[in-house]
Amino acid sequence: MRYLLLTLLLSMTTYAEMSENPEEWRVVTDRVMGGSSNLQADYDEGTFKIMGNVVKKDGGFVRISHRLENPMKNAKGIKFLARGNNETYEVHLTMKGLKMPPWSYMSTQFDVTDDWKEYVISFDEFSKNGFMTASMKSQNIGEIAIAGYGRDFDVDMEFKNVSLF
Image (cartoon, rainbow, N blue to C red; front, side, top):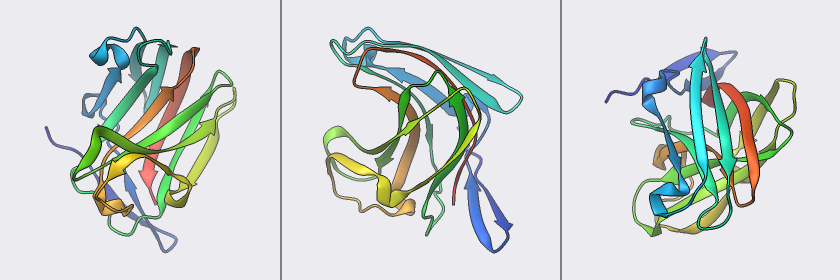
């Protein structure tokens, strides 16, 4: 599977966009470990829409993720547009290299409202969840995900224009 990573030079700042090809994003839920959360993802005219529910018992997560083949070096963060059902969601970064446990990741939270909002999140705002040998450098990112996590709630969110900056 090929991944599209575009580099743009805009106003002296470099951006790397994630592919908006829905086939290059994948849905994962806690059902892979016996949980009962659900997630459906749709794509229309450049916008991903995720709908479902997070059930904390026996897992408590849903996510839509994109694997980065050649992450942009020296990026400082991630940005995207999102709107939704007035809930708190997370951005997950899975780093390359050794991780303990193997599903360790870095994360930060963001709150969505009914209105489109641009989120510009510095990598400094991410916290470790587990142990990983790779340092927090953009070239060490293996996967980026938008996730619902850790509590019972309905998932209903749209996002687009995901890029590193």
